[in-house]
Image (cartoon, rainbow, N blue to C red; front, top):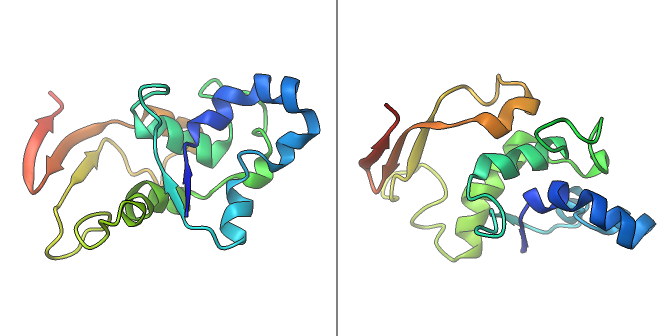
Length: 148
C-alpha cells in the first residue's frame, strides 16, 4: 500500500529539481509504484495542500499545475489515468483505512457517499480537471450540500 498525495508532485517541481536533480526520476513515481504491485491510496494532505480532491486528480493525470506548467507534464511517464486516480481516491483510500466493506465503491449496503459532478469527467479535457466541482454531495445516503 502506498499512500500518495498527487498534488505534492506539482507543488514541489521547482524545489525538487533544484535539491534532488536527476534523483527526481524516482520521486513521485506513482506509475512505477503501481507497476511494482503497490496499491495506491490517494489523498489531499490538507491542510498542507488544498482539500479539493480535483486539484490532486488533475496533478496525477496531467503532472502539471493548473496553469499548464510544465509543458507536457513533469516526469510524464509517471502519470496515472483518470480511472486509476479515481480508484485511488475512492476504493484505494477505503482499502488503506480498512473500510472497503463500508465505502470506496457504490455497492448495496455501503454508505452511499456520492458527489454529483458538474460535468462528465471522462469526457472532459484533462487540463480542466482541477476546476471540477460538486453540484450535489450525499453522505450516508443523505443530501448534505447542493450548489445553488
